[in-house]
Image (tube, rainbow, N blue to C red):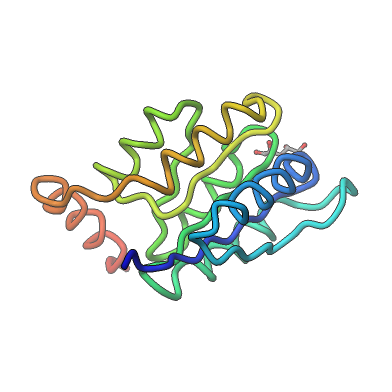
Length: 152
Ligand code: RB5
């Protein structure tokens, strides 16, 4: 049986609408526990607060994955990648999301509601959730990244 993965989603006001749609989409897939970490409206908030919250949740367990949505995805990725154990990738295509999983073992997907439409966002999320890390030569490269995280 396929292990059930838990996926958390979080957004700022600029990504709130897309988050609501993606929460519903991932829930109806039926194979993931879905956790909504906010925000809950289009009232202005600060994206770092939500990126930090989601990064802490994802870093708890290897089987946790996250999706962050802001205007462009960039701010969310910058913040999330400062958290130990987080490998966040901004993706504008399903191909990038596939390689972010297969080569980089990304555990957080960052989307931009202002630059990526709903249909494409769903395809990107699908690619992210259904591809796996290939290991091998990619594992050796990631080991160098993990080493950096332990540096003072
Ligand atoms: C909010 O206006 C916007 O700056 C934010 O959503 C994000 O795009 C930052 O990277």
